[in-house]
Image (cartoon, rainbow, N blue to C red):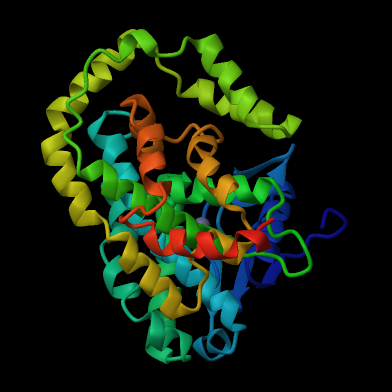
Length: 365
Ligand SMILES: [Zn+2]
């Protein structure tokens, strides 16, 4: 692009748009985009999702000057692409809950504009997954509108916080480890969808608790211990380095932890109600995803049972963004909750997944 001064136009979806967006920025010129599939929310977003130094990250760059999307074209996009966009949009249910938590614990305030662009109409945009799958024009319009608004939310807040929480950390970790890099690539949305079911299930367990927690601070890891535990959880050198940096960026001392837990005790009754209102049950998220044609269990995306279970702890380390994974870790209940989710005969939200696990373990990677 540096050899001429033309204005680039991306015609396509996720990856094409991200590459053109970042290139246009590096060449200091505007660009525009013709979206051909309702497959992700990056069209109007600030930033491009690109893997750099082994870490999938959002590289900073402005959004396009204009986005054009024709419903007749979107309707004819491959079914899986539309389903992926749906899963990415439904992921805003759990990411919103994560932001409420970060806000209440005074880690990151909710920005009213960024919040309302994404959350105000989320229920309406995601309530007809079966119609969407059948190619219904209205449902397609709702989905694309949601994805465009979600991108605008990120643009307005200059961060992906508006659209991405722990469910995206699951997706990013799997992506960075090469999950689905085989013959049929696994889309961003499909990984986010499985992550959303997993995070909603964790939320269900946490919301049942009183979180009246004291005396944890003696067992809280020092900075060095935390660093060592992150190294121990990853094996890829680039991923390790990035994860250590991100985890230490959100590290707090034992004294700060004591203060945070005190604040948590104070705000929990009100916060719990707010989060309940924001969330959907894991079963409902699973049903909606299935109706839209998305995978909902780790096996459908080629992930083994143990790797899936380990993701709860490992995903927390790869981003400094504060989510329910941090809340559970700091409250000392993450391990316990995950053990409950995966216990044989578990009766909670993971039950349908557990059942699949018991009968198909020989097929699992
Ligand atoms: Zn996403």
